[in-house]
Structures are given as structure tokens and as C-alpha cells.
Length: 89
Image 1 (cartoon, rainbow, N blue to C red):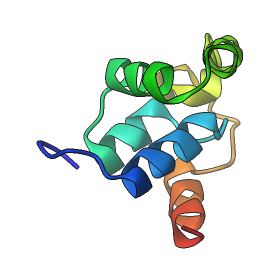
Image 2: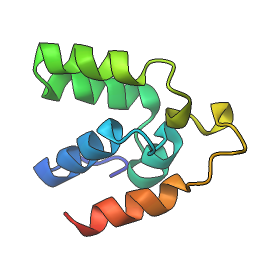
Image 3: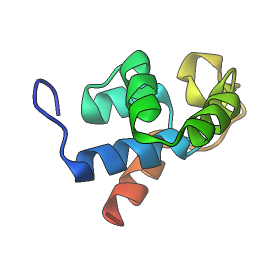
């Protein structure tokens, strides 16, 4: 997705990963090339205003959305979760 226009499927996939609590912004960037700021911009443009507000409240400060903030006790691997979700698309 780097350097090209996102398709509707690409946008849907990014939105799905962004809503998933356990998929970090780092994983989204690895999969799509979009930085956290770009994901936020995409979400603002694609969601209804109230949905965007709810999403921002949900992810703001959420440690699971940033690998560096995660506790070592967290047992899940967000790349595997992203793989599982993508298979359903």
C-alpha cells in the first residue's frame, strides 16, 4: 500500500485493524505502510464524526495499541491476530 492509492478493501482492512484493540499501530504500519498519524487521518476521513470520536477515546493511551507500552505479561502476539483477521477478508 506504500506509495499507491488505497482501494476500498485496503481502507476497510486498515479500519478493521485500527478498531482491534490488540493490533498495534506498529503492526498496521508493517502491513500497510501507514504511520499512526496517517491511520488517524484515514479514520477521521472515513468514519462518521461520532464514530471517530469514540474510536479516538478508545485508543488514546491504550497500551495494547503501542508495542513499547505493553507489559511483558501480555501473552498475545498482535501480528498473528492481524493475520487471522486478514484471512477473513
